Length: 239
Length: 246
Image 1 (cartoon, each protein chain N blue to C red):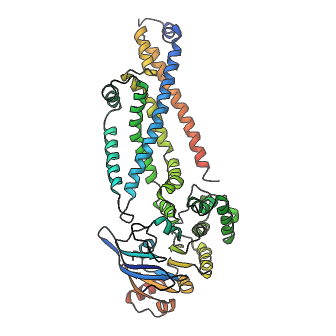
Image 2: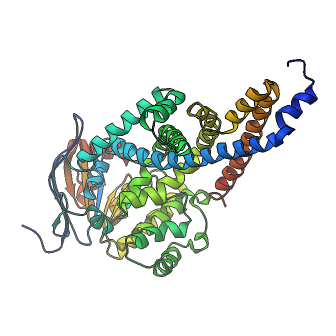
Image 3: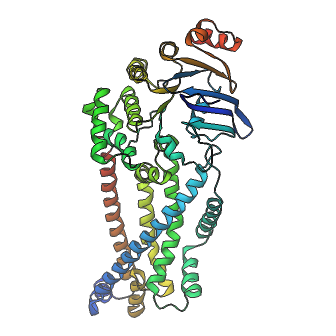
C-alpha cells in the first residue's frame, strides 16, 4: 500500500469516484460551521462584553450598582472561566454526547458548541476594545444628555470595533480551524472527509496534505480580506 | 430660601473616592446669567465639584438642585437634566469616528430635540459663529487643539443648554490657541449664558467672572468678586496660591 506511486495515490485520493467532490462538500460544511458559529459567537460576545464593561465602568461616582448587573456580571464571569478553562474537544463531546445526545441535528449542535466556545473569546476581545476607549468619550456623550446605550452604539462600539479588528480576525481563523474538531461528534466536514477517504484507500498522505493545503488557502484568503477591511476602516478617520 | 433667579444650588455636598475625601460639605448656588470661575491648586477638588453639578460624579452626601429640581433624587432622569447643562472638557472629547457636523448634530437628533435637517442647519449656524464652517465635513483628527475645543463648545451649545460647565477648557492647549477659545467663551458670557468655569486663566476670571470661588482641600476657602479675590485676598492659602500663579 505504501508502495503505490504518487500518481496512483493522487488518483485514489481525489479522482476515483469523484472523491474531490467530497472534499469540496466538506470544505463547504466547514465554512458553514464557521459562519454560523461566528455569528453566534459575536452575539454572545457583544452581550457579555457590554454586561462586563458596564459593570467595570460603574465607578463610585456613577449611580448605584443595580443588583441585576452584579448577578449578570457573575454569570458572565463563570461562563468565560468554564469555557476558556476546558478544551474545545471536550466541550464538543459534552454537547454532542451528553446534553444533546438524542439530537439528530449534529450540524446545529456543532454550531452551538463552537459558537458558545467562540463567544467566550470574542467577549474578552470586545471588552478589551471597549476598555481601550478613553472614558472621556462616554462622559462627553452622557454630558450631552444621551443615554448609555446610545453612546455605546454610536460612539464607543464603532471605535472599539476598529481597534479589535485584528484580534477578531485571529478568532475567525482559529474558529475555522477548530471546525476540524467536530468530526468527533460524527459531523462530516473537511477533516472527516479526509479520514473517511483514508479509511477506504489506506493512503493517508494525499488526503491529509490535501486538506492541509485547503485550510491554508482559505486562511490566506481570510487574512487578505481582513487586511483590506482594516485598511478601509482606518482610511475613514483621516480624510 | 430660594432666590428667584437661582439656577443651580448645591447643599452640603461631599464627595469621596474610597477613603479619600475630595469635597467636604460645600453649599453654594449659582444664579441665572451668572459667571462663576472656580480656581484653586491642582488636586483641590475643583473639577470634581464641577462634575458633581451634572452628576458625572454622584455626590457621596448632599444634594444638587438645578432649575428648581432636586436632581440628586434617584427618580430624576439624569439625561433630561444633562440636556440643559452643556459641558466642555479639558481634553475636548470630540468623537473621532464622527465628522465635525455629526459631532454637533448627534445629541440633538438622538435625544429627539431636532430632526437631522434642523440640527444640520443649527450646526451650520454655530460653526459660522466660530469661523469653522469649512471644517464641517472633516474628522476631528485633522483639527488643531484650539479648533477642537471651539467645536466642543458649539457641540454643547447645539443642545441649547441653560448653563455651561467648563472643566479647564484651555489647559490642554498650546499657548497660541488659548486666545481663540477664550474669546468664544467671552462671547458666550456676553450673551448672558450662565457659566461655571474651572480655570487657571486668571486673566479670564478677572475679566469675565461675576464671582470667583477659591477651592482648596475640598472646601471653598474664599469667594467674592474678582476684585476682592485677586486684589484683596484674605485667606492665607489664597494669597500663597495667587503669589504662585500671578
